[in-house]
Length: 134
Image 1 (cartoon, rainbow, N blue to C red):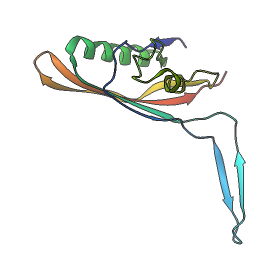
Image 2 (image 1 turned 90 degrees about the vertical axis):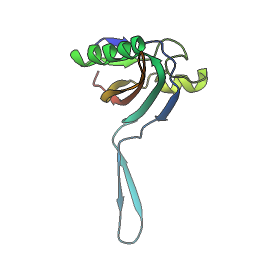
Image 3 (image 1 turned 30 degrees about the vertical axis):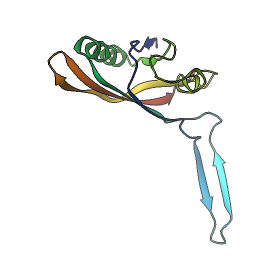
Image 4 (image 1 turned 90 degrees about the horizontal axis):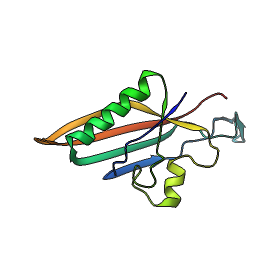
């Protein structure tokens, strides 16, 4: 599975959730709680990026990226510095999943494109972090 670098287009909005650890919580009738954790890696991280008032050419780059990632069940990377995620370097490292997390960003839904006026569009992208088997 090759990684596909997201286009170097700076988002105007961003929402990020680092995901959770797979676990089940058991609560007894007396109120005691036991947690069974099924792994030491996070799953189901979420990332939403908004691109307001960008050129139609940049909107097409995002749609091309979506098509290329999903054609072979590849995954998206944000390797173009802080531009692609629109965050400072320390936060961008979390979003890029640097440090061996092994989460792979895949589109959780197709990008949505709204026309602003001729030649300009707004695009919304949503990603989910999947943990692939090695």
